[in-house]
Structures are given as C-alpha cells and as structure tokens.
Image 1 (cartoon, rainbow, N blue to C red):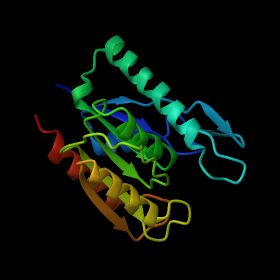
Image 2: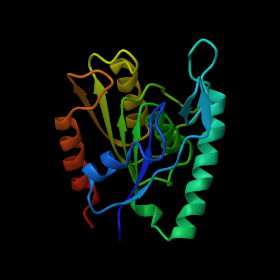
Image 3: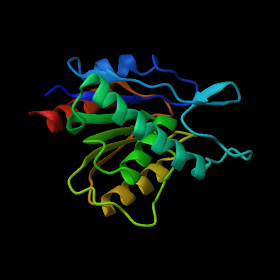
Image 4: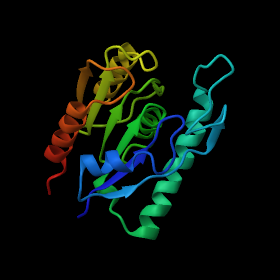
Amino acid sequence: MLLTLLLLHGTGGDENYMIPLGRALSGEAALLSPRGTVVDAGKVRFFRRLADGASDLEDLKERTHQLADFIERVAVTHGFEPARLFAVGLSNGADIAASLLLSRPGLLRGAILFRPMVVPRPQVLPDLSSLPVLISAGITDPTSKKERAHQLARVLDEAGAEVCFRCWRAGHDLKLAEIKQAREWLSGRTRV
C-alpha cells in the first residue's frame, strides 16, 4: 500500500507550496495537496480569522468537514488507501489537520503538525488510541506560540494519540534538522 501525504499549507501558501516538503518527508509517497478556500487580506487560508485576528472556530469546524468530505471523495476517485493517509500541516494547515483528527477520527492514519496555533478541543474527545502525531514548535515563534502547541499535544494525548512533541530553536520557519527528524519519525510509523 502506498503512503499518501495530505499536504496542508499555511496562510499565504497554495497547493504547490508544500510539495517540496512532502518530497523531503517521503520520496515515495503520493501527495495530495489541496488549496485553502478562504482568502483573508489577499492571502489563502483554510479557515477564516475574526476581525481581531483570532481564529474563527465556527468556520474552522465547517471547513474541517468540507475538507474531510473532499478527502473522502478524492480517495474514491483516485483510489488511494485512507488507512495510509498522513496529514502534514504547516501553521493554518496544521490547525485544520488537528481539527480533522479531533472531529473526523478514522480519516487520517496520523499527522505531522508544524507550528500549530489553534487548539480545537471538542466537547467530547474522540478515541485516537495509538494514532501517531508529531507536533513541532519553534521556541521563538511569534505567530505559533509553543505553549499553544503544547496545549494541543495535551489534548491529543488525552484522546489517546501517540504524541511526539518537539521544540526547535526556531521561529515560524522550519529547520533542515527538524525536517530530517520528521522524515525519520514518519518512516518509523509507515513501514508496512
């Protein structure tokens, strides 16, 4: 079974932005890279922000289900195996990936979340028993505070996920060593 990476870009990215990262994480995986459907201040995102800059959590919920429905349709159309689908999200893309994990359990086999910012905690936590999730935070990131990423790690851990939390001497940018570590982590969880 071929591994498929669901690549979810950050604010200002597009469907091509995450392709090099996907290739760096796995040269053999199929890549599914949708474009966010929201334009905010001229930049593409996966869900809206409120006027004060905070994330619109109601919009996040709605767009999470739209993205999940899209993934299910594409899986049938293109014949990829949902049991081998890992999300790789960056910033805004990491937030919607986390929301997919928590609101549509069973859709993803695991996730790599680079610089998540939002903790979309549902009222009732799903059973994510042994679901592998890597969360990668930047210690000096002014946008995605490491405390928020750690909060998300706790929520996923409470739901039973196998969470690996890493902090890097970095801001919002990704470091080569961090990508290499994510590749090794992914490889260790996707062997058939």
